[in-house]
Length: 151
Image (cartoon, rainbow, N blue to C red):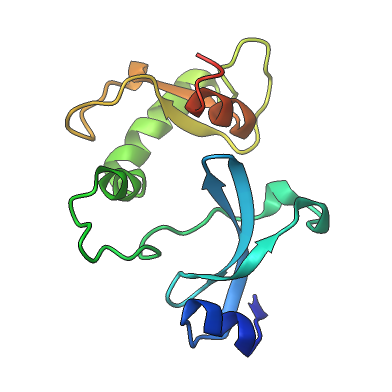
C-alpha cells in the first residue's frame, strides 16, 4: 500500500490516501494503475511496464464499485463486469480450470500463470453457459482471443 500525493487525488476527486498498484485489463491488453483501496477509483496516471519489477505478481483491478453507473444501470458491459465477480461465474470458471488442468488451453501453450476464462459464446442469460463454452487461456492468449486474433 502506498500514499499518493494531493495532485493525483485531485485528478480523480478521491480524498483517500491508501492506494495499491493493480493490473487493469483494457482493450489493448493490460495497463498498470494505482487504485484507491477505499473508493476503488483510479488514482494518477498509468505506470509503465518497465517500471514494474514483477508484473505477474501485481493483483488484478477490483471492479466491484470502480465505475460510475449513473444513467448506465442497464449497460450490458457493466452487467458483464458484475457477473465476472459473481459466485456463479467463479463456479463455472473453477470447473473449466479443473477440466484444463490449470493450464492454458491454447494449442502449444503450457502457460499456467494469470489464467482466465474466455467465453467462446456469450449466453443470453449470464450464468447459464455450459462449462464447455468456457476456454481457459493465459493472459496473452486471452487478449488475442478477445481481439479476434485467436480462436
